[in-house]
Length: 106
Image 1 (cartoon, rainbow, N blue to C red):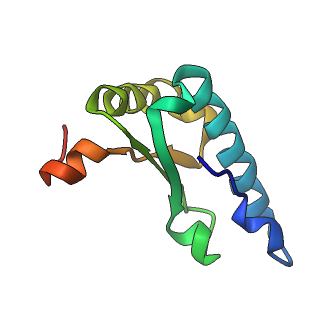
Image 2: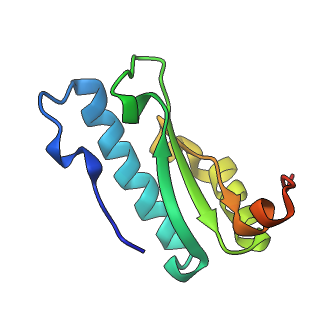
């Protein structure tokens, strides 16, 4: 997995973006304390943060793609249990199995 902080080249980072970047880093650290990197295919960030359109009510959508549904469920539980620790970020996981089967796992 290639790690890249795509925001490194951003100019004039706002206070809201600074808070979001800290949140992303904390969320990622918590994720990898609970889930092995080998279980994660990739991680994407999407939404207003990426478009640089955040406001005070915005969240940061972090999309971990897992190899299997078991890991997907673990990340969903992690979000429920520790999500307040890394707000405004939140995990919105998907699995490769979901894409293969074209079916969302509850």
